Amino acid sequence: MRPILFSCSGSAADLICLAALRASGARLCSIVQTPGELTRADFPGKAAKLFGGEVPWLQVNVPPLRSFFAPGGAPAAGEAQPLSRALAWFASAAQEGAVLLSTTRLTLPAVFFLSDPVRAAKLSKVLVLGGAIYGGDATPTAESRIYDDPEAAEIVLARAENATLLPLETAKQCRVPAARFPNLFPYATEAEKTDAAGLGLLLALEQPQAAACEQYRVRVELESPLSRGCTACDVLCRDKTQPLHAFVTALDVKAFSEAARKAGEALRQGGDWNVET
Image 1: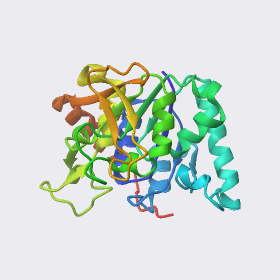
Image 2 (image 1 turned 90 degrees about the vertical axis):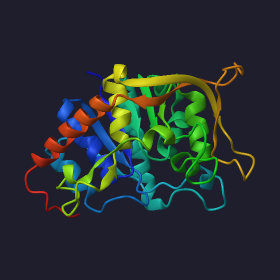
Image 3 (image 1 turned 180 degrees about the vertical axis):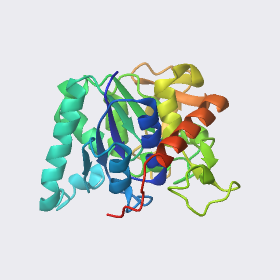
């Protein structure tokens, strides 16, 4: 089984995705976290419990790629070592032909593609939660994960071969009852729903037959403030200079529900979850 390198922000949706990974028996080689607005403070402890502390975890507080090139925009001295270590993990995983599964902004993968293109080309698959076909949530045209670092997204999507994206339109369908995950949402009712978009991306990897995909040539808009971060999709694939990527346009409802059920069971079997770090 191909190893998986999980690049995430550490949200509740990421914990659900990790639980599904554990339930499926996937080989997770490492977790690299770039914190964001939805990061949970207890993410490291809960992730460690899911995998018995056997999967290496690293947090890297790296700024968006554009700030690297601004005066004084390089990572702080204290972050240089974690960044170097993260890139070494990326290189080691790629050398094994790993799958990159990203549910956060693409800053770290972009730095890896720029700094080590030979090994980056050895990634067997690149799966990205992000982008939009018709309209965004951060702006009318841009989806938030791409908008948070569009330069990084453009670098990754320009260099990755046949990446798979789960766009905003499909991510909105990936919601499950929060009460199914009492270890994450102890006071939730069945009527409340929670984001599980990462689970949808994982389903597209592990059960390709459960994901309907369309092939589009895509680039990320960087010039106009009005369209910055937009994933411009050439649905007719006329521009042969742009890379061809797969967009997950629909997921099998039963397969997704079953994956969520197994993830919930994996979380419930985690023992004492009163871990705060």
